[in-house]
Image (cartoon, rainbow, N blue to C red; front, side, top):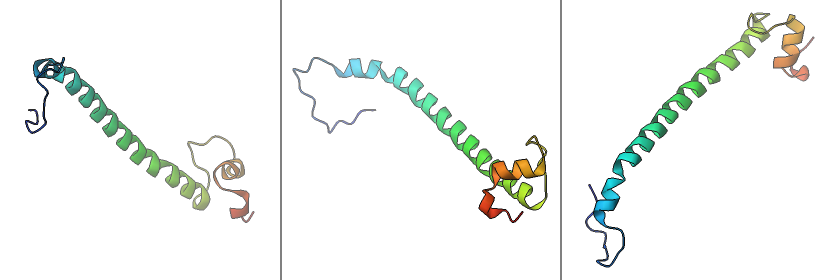
Length: 86
């Protein structure tokens, strides 16, 4: 469990058993961080696909149903005015 090649002073106030007792808390934190990483990766992947698809649909297909308003208003929101040849 622990690296035995690390020198541990015999007069140290914290024993190896004290450190070993904190392992369950460290495991809980590690599990929470792993969950956070997975949720962030999935959300970034989904949003990284959703917004570019909405922009491309709006640009080439017309009005995107999930963006309220008219086509020209949605285009002004999603696409810079210099990119529109309107």
